[in-house]
Image (tube, rainbow, N blue to C red; front, side, top):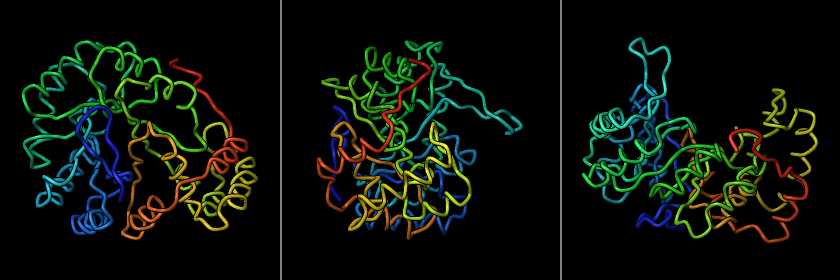
Length: 304
């Protein structure tokens, strides 16, 4: 599988990363999915301390222990479970981040994290303090690089201008083209990459999209009726020789600002299907233009 440089770091990430949130809590099943990802050439694994109260980090760390030096582990911080574990609160403070990283390292069974990401963020956060925390962790050797997971342009703009982030993890797909209007233009010559999550739009851009439509699904500013017309049209015009999954993942990868697309998988077959899609031929300029003529150039209405 091809790799791309993550921002101005020295991390070379596979064009497809495994979103580990969907692994579940079964040790054996998680191991099988991660091993299938490794077999396909995936070297980028994304987790978070929030997922399954930290169990996800434990599963990921255990499954990757024998290949630790060959893979890139990304995890996240900022969402803090209450003592009852019935909800979480937002805490981007320096003290919390520097304490939480040690717990993540312990669960992952490693002495460093390749990419440590702020798991959200608002414009009212103590951003300079948060940046200080990540810079401290980097200088202390706990993390190699850091980034932010956010869809808020105003927050992203602050971190691009004030910090040394190398990556922005954000939702991006051909039904959610909002990053094209605000975020992509910010990245020119900044040494920051996009890591695209949600590339299959909750399955609406996969080959099982009809099943999702049968459930009456809507998505962002697309209603169910609109999707029922749009998705078959895209499928017919673009997927005669491609899977719909190929079209969706290759759309993200058509942008050089995108270092990797992160797709979750709850089965080995999903991993292999997504990997095959990423290894397929790139979209042509004509195909990209067609997609953009059919879909909405939607924009962020908030947090601009």
